[in-house]
Length: 265
Image (cartoon, rainbow, N blue to C red; front, side, top):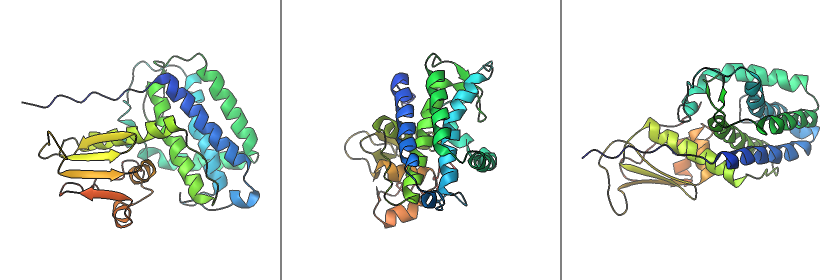
């Protein structure tokens, strides 16, 4: 008997809007405290400095406002689970735009203020089913805001890694949404039920073709924490290094996810 089709995970639109604004606010507060020396530090994102990374965060959020200013597309082109795999083709354009934005806005606090004000205003009366003409493909505002939690959480982690002691906090709802979307993207890339991936307290997914377990402990189990998972899924951390450093527990012959990661470039 064929297994039932998995239902697509849904997100509470109001909570996601709140989480997006909260995490952007967390980053804004931290960026405001950075010294000139800290802004000049390197990051793990190629040749970007902390200043350029901080500017990029506003770019990732401003896309919501900018897309709401554009005409609404005729139909959706991208589902939420398509998005992680559609981002890699834009890496070059994003890098160029980030450098230009950082150079044109030496006052980062002013840039963050404008971005936050525009986002708050635009979200006040925009319905969740409003289609956005995003460069990765047209999608609903509700879905696009879930992708913004990924951008914000991932780059919060990048900033924390670049600046010792910065310790920007993570909004719980933003961290949960980011973790769940990337976990579901793994299940979409490698459908199946032979391996259970556990990312407590936010997500459990089954993936990888093979014998499906029906009760008890599955034969193939992967378990890790949310930030380690996010780093694996976005290429910040290699699978073999995470296993060697005991940041991931993997048991069973189908528990090696190294060939499926990263999900995003």
